[in-house]
Length: 392
Picture (cartoon, helix red, strand yellow):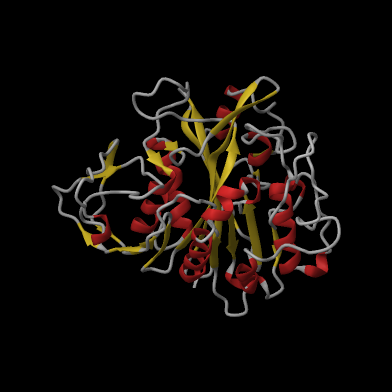
């Protein structure tokens, strides 16, 4: 199942801290996949993720389903910590009960509560609920960044729903992938999205600020066989609190996100295949990120050019390109896809030829050996001679 695949990937990532500390440049990126049911031999949809984190709290927990009374009309939201303990409090599983010396987590706000929430498994990220909805996540570079309440270091709108909370809400309140993207779109616009603690790194491209790992791409797959990719970044004060867009994975296809937003050219109006913020074009124009010429492509407009930006180190475009190209090539070898330096030239998804569900098991070990893309060969060096190795 999607939950088992993600749990296995998380466990593998948890075993990496010593290597990651010794060779930071060799860390795995958070690769997420959304696989439509028509791409698997069983008809099952999959949402897959491997988590790149050497300090995260990977404890597995089940949050039980709950019913709420009318007086329980608010749901607290938190700025969740990735390191142990990621949250401290009661009502979400015994592992969170405070130990001696631990302080209770303090909410940064609250939102309306619903009458019933589904039960779900979670680790550092939520995984899958009791309705068969699975999730994945990959942090991406963004041109827009929100700020926490009472923060003045960023000029963007205030946000109170962080990435972890977004995924929690999706699994608490939704049974289908379509419900999840609609709900998170509403939450992003109403309450404002903020990234994980410590993830964003500020840089500049052509004098404009950019933030590595500030945006999020979530993948969703449900028991009906439908899969979606949901993108979200910060917003524009007075226009929209967060910009978001989502695309359904075409029938029989596999989509891969590898720490950069993937092609998503939007129609003029939302439809069965695309959903997005109603003021997304106003936001793009107000931020001077778009010239108004259609189509508006989310990855081209709201993300920095992966060939140009770096935060603390030179740009490494193949960091994303190699992973996407390799997984697409495994799922659909007959396409003979060309490895692109700019991953935005690769398709959003490929038709899986019935093999896509098996490809998720190859996320960790699937890099090629020999030839120009062998990450052990020493061929990939930056302009100061430092080795850049790329997992794919």
